[in-house]
Length: 194
Image (tube, rainbow, N blue to C red):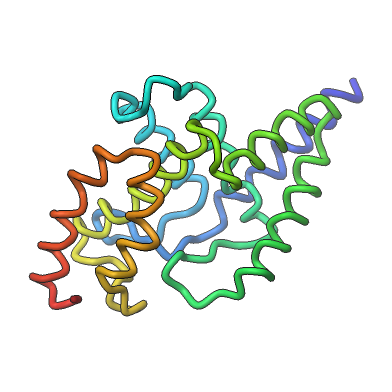
């Protein structure tokens, strides 16, 4: 019963991810997306776009990474990639959140889930590189569909897109970046965001 108590306590805590609002808006621009919705949506992206992964990529493992990757936002909050953030402070907050949240679980799950989260953060394995690529590609696709999202507010340029989105997407899913980049260039040019 002690194991089940810990697991259910973690699941209850994970529900808080539904209340973490992101800087990204929904495609219909109705409201801001929450982090739980984002995690679900990037998992769906990974499943649908699995044919864009290299042959060495385990989509099952990618789905685990995407399910867990933003759970730390319960404590650390969401910080958009184009926002002005103290990266060192954010990383420290996320590490502390990972310790606390995964620490709620029984030891075997704590260690397994934390290893998956750490692997995603390091982005050194093919699985993590594909997961990072998918995580980065969802928002630009959404922003192009809703008229730019918060790109204007953050003063995002195509150079920033190449660096902050293109580098990880090109590394983990080069076919997706080859498809997406020309669309972004055209969008930024038309919107006058160059």
